[in-house]
Image (cartoon, rainbow, N blue to C red; front, side, top):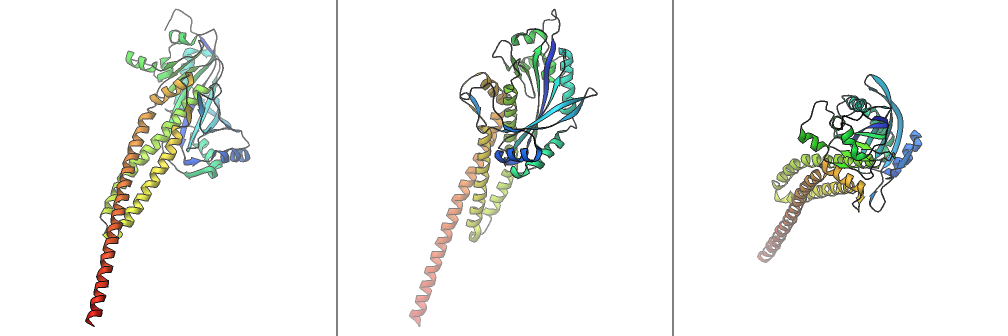
Length: 377
């Protein structure tokens, strides 16, 4: 950082806190639009990317963006108004966004303000308005949700945004003009060189006066045009992570239960083995079909066809959030379930064939016995 130059002033910007929840197996987005407009009299629109060409990056099924009443949050002992929106995804995830606009302040004050907000309503907060907001949304949209759940899994993320400085500023010059590390890490102590390097590794710039830096739980965006596409695709990557985490844990719970059921089915007598194998195989097939359907929806929420700026940011976010790794874990567990299903189906078929053979032998034995009885009499 170049300390010989005066510290720039952030003239306009915002801090956005995200909290994502997995609330249902799936959500009917068309019904969401009508329910929200009818019951809340608020806006409900399909999300679109403003700057990305449709041929390069677009939503497969555009989520619904709804607006809610603003809430007051206490930051540094002062009540601040936060605008509230939520994005509803068809694979059962709700992402709530609290956005606090910033007044003109120095960069150090801006960093302190962002970290204080994180302590008040972000990942470090013990309380916050999230549960009440989520309850309001669920209460209104309940008819649109298929198989609601109360999963404790959540994802949170903090996005710091600068729209305007008090002087012309190139995005590539920012790391030399201001200390970005406190706002990217939430730490006030001096960080190691390795940590500093890791935090700044995923840095992107398309025009000379923009910049996006993505980390595991925070992002910094400098965007003079006010476009929200970078923030939106970071949110999408978080929604995908949450969905894959949900099914990863679901399969972790199902696999031991599956092994126990298989053990019981194999311990059944031959008379009932075929039915038990068949019933269990159908249950496993249903599980595989459901998980595959929802994970494919989550995996394809954004369609990327060209290596443009936003697509690179999106793919980098997926990598940082380890979405491919969690997705691969889900696929491995699904493969185990599929193999078990195939084995059970084969055993069910074998058990049915064995039962038929026994029945045939039994009928032949009866016919022979009847013939002998007739012959003797």
